[in-house]
Length: 312
Image 1 (spheres, helix red, strand yellow):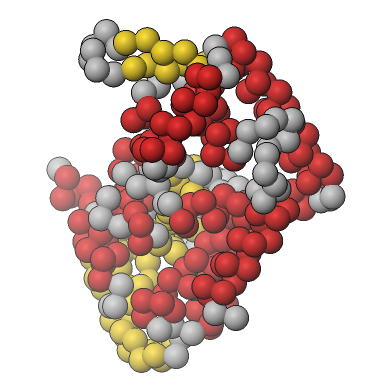
Image 2 (cartoon, rainbow, N blue to C red):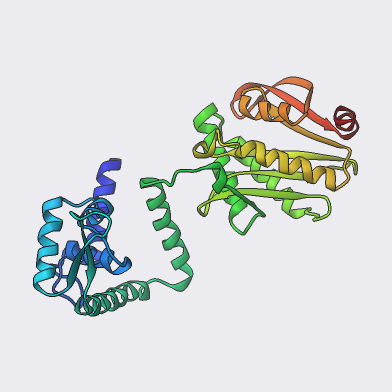
């Protein structure tokens, strides 16, 4: 099946499962469109018809007919806006609120019936999948002031491994051996984690991961590594990479290391620019064949003594 066919198949399945093909919603004689208008009015103290049209993306004439029916059934009332004499502010009557409460209870019961068929352990996976669909179809615009850094949680390392592998395959054509490298690095990080020597940061906005970076100890007690910096395409250009590297460098200083080193490849130009701005120096380049390509590997370092002299 093509992608279009699969989406249409899912739509047919989902509308049937949640009862959208029924003439009326549970516990009411309202159609789906009427129930949506009722819901919007119940969530707000007052709305104009134009507000409802913009929120629901419905046809103006359709909304007008629904509001007229609601008036006829004493479900809504209106008053003239004190700011705009030509605008009517709509709100639910007591009868309208009672009807909304009944519909809300009926819909909740219907959803609870669907969930009853799903084992409790599988419900988080269902919710995560639904959130993914919503995010992909209508992604929330990422802005710098909404990005937060946090510590890793269960599931983050698997996500980071997958996303880095997918992005680098898409952008640079790297094969699955890079995914194996990331998995090995993160596996060793967890296996030998020391809160006094290691750290990690996940960049997140609206509950979605948009980047990460890791500070890892080495066999030399005075040297640490910055590893696996990545930023989602949706968050690039907002300073997320710089924020992650700057935070890692600040932690490096606090933990008392003398040298921070990292290994990257020349094709990752955006990351290289960030390292340069944070004071890293390129000390070695070496050609190698990895991830299905001939690459130019680079080693960069940030030396505490040199940084101190530069800031003096």
